[in-house]
Length: 95
Image (cartoon, rainbow, N blue to C red; front, top):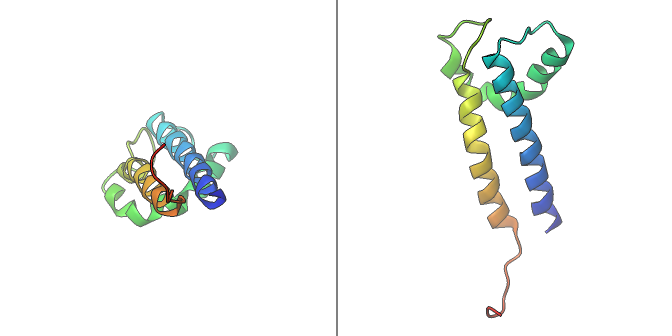
């Protein structure tokens, strides 16, 4: 149960960071700002596997990162499936 609960918290934190990254890129946050540079550095491992989706887009300015959007949509689904798989199953009848 503790592992499943930790997974939900970790997935929620990652989701929040991804949504902040998506909003920052949509609003053209400057990547040389230390706060946004840290955000991009922390979230890059989550977005890197799908970075090819953004290859045709420009690097600076307001950009809708398809890779970030895709990961932000897939992460809750994957976390839910893992939570169901890790959650203890009741072995009795319904009350």
